[in-house]
Length: 104
Image (cartoon, rainbow, N blue to C red):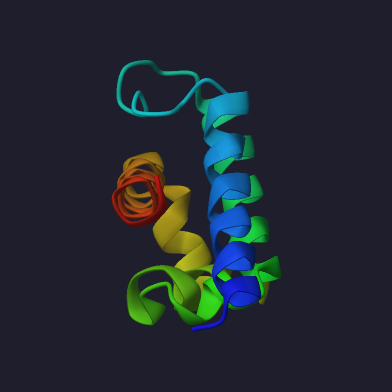
């Protein structure tokens, strides 16, 4: 892997982790009931993953990339799945943990 590609992936991962930091949700998704910021965080992370370049190819497709694409496309099944806030919490927690483990 070339240095530019690695740097770009790391920058994209850091940008997504910064979204969590901005909402002060890095590692605390289950600790409060602030659903408004949870919803904004979810939408922001979904948009960030959909807009990724090199990082997207490295993320687990079935777990992260596909659901984000389906939500953006308005797929009724995925949108309905994520209307349940606990599903959003688990999803966001999984993405956070993955990025921290691999790129953190």
